[in-house]
Image (cartoon, rainbow, N blue to C red; front, side, top):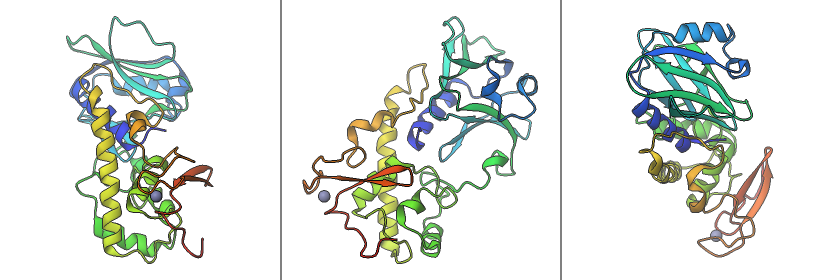
Length: 286
Ligand SMILES: [Zn+2]
């Protein structure tokens, strides 16, 4: 699954190539790609036609394109393999092209939703007064959002009576932190993934948030190398950041701080990677 930095790379590409263009026509080539738009493919295409795309927006891993002068937005579900591509109209169709959006201007590009495994798709939703698609109104702000409240997050963490990695993946507390960036930030902060949150101190929360922001910004900086091409991409893996990972996927390899072999634990149908020396397990695991 793409994580926040990968989705932000896509958002920036769309902002550059698609924002403020008027839809001439939307073509749905596979009905599965609009299955979350319950009124169907024809209704989806009809509602886009003639509307200008606003500034692409993101919260956590959710990405949407507002339709100007409506209270609606196109929500993109990238799933495991979904890609939003901006291509020349003359470029041959991709094998797994699902949706094409043509624009009513002289620019020779169109927006394509390509998805090999069709877990993803596009759907149109009403927006809240904040401009969020209503189906994601419950998602908390992400740590790169200037309006994210560090103090409120700390209080919520202490009240939650959970363990830290569960909390980091709880989209109602903080959004956009997936399995990979959680492991990276916890390693940097020297915190074991099963630490109870109830006794987190304010400085410890602040330090952890700092590491989360650092990891995400570093990943964004690496992904940023592709901004200038005409190709906006989510690759469905851990993105451009693979070579810089300190914890995730490093089972058996030496910890980059203390050289102790890194460990992997099965955790909620996923894996947690950690250094058993730098990140001491709590005495009573929950
Ligand atoms: Zn270590």
